[in-house]
Length: 375
Ligand SMILES: [Zn+2]
Image (cartoon, rainbow, N blue to C red):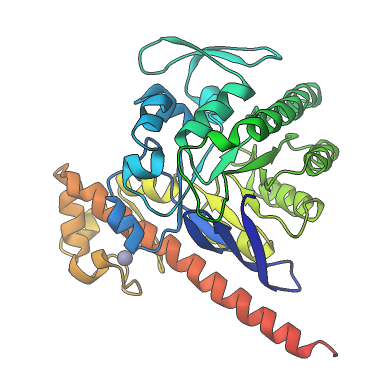
């Protein structure tokens, strides 16, 4: 037994309010997952990430495999225990970072040989190896090993990439099913890790359809839409999500990887996406960009040098309660470590706030439509 996914309300537009019951957390969806690349949501301690309402955070398999190493993490009790995070975790397959960060990659049907971006050492990732690493890390949700198709990709390239991703999905699933009992933690209800398949296919509708149908046949615990936010225009992201969502089983969670801006995550959540992750709120924060109810605020700007107002007057996060724009600008200008911490706390609070509001809306819209429906 793996995850349990229970729909609470659905809306006429396809939005879903649901609960995703994982070993370490009952996650209220739609959910935004902060990215904790190397076992840390950069600049923010876990207790604060928790207090902001994060239910599920993401760890990057590629980074954790290279440093400190998945066997080391297994020996110290798995990723939850290692980083002191009692709630749910998801690890990606390592595929995306192998393709975006590593050097001298060589892809074959068997897997990918690459050199570490840290020290140039040579490594070989296969679907089976990605599963081994993810089982050692022990997140609640693991992801099938895939090849993220770049944008733009011509038809032949997208077809070839999809062929690999589909073969790797099957191998990931087979290995996972044979070894998932090796996870280091024990769930009293007997639940194990879950595995999601990833829909690829570039920007070609028929390839996306083929990908979704074949993955659904394989029967994963949930489905992700990958290969988005890779430089394509936003309309194309939206179109692809709208195309793929109806092809996925309604009773399983749907995860769009690597999105997005505040208005995007809201829009996709209302369309029926249950899970999203993105480095944007944390990365932008470290560059001095704050997302607020009044739009984007670039804290570096001189106009804030003596601005005593809070970063976002409508935000009730601990940063907006206590500190001024002038102080946040000063911290950034002075290169203080606290700058990244405070900016990130606010941005995460803003993202968590959006999702809380969307969840409440979906639930009430669902109620209304249920009440209006003829009995
Ligand atoms: Zn705030």
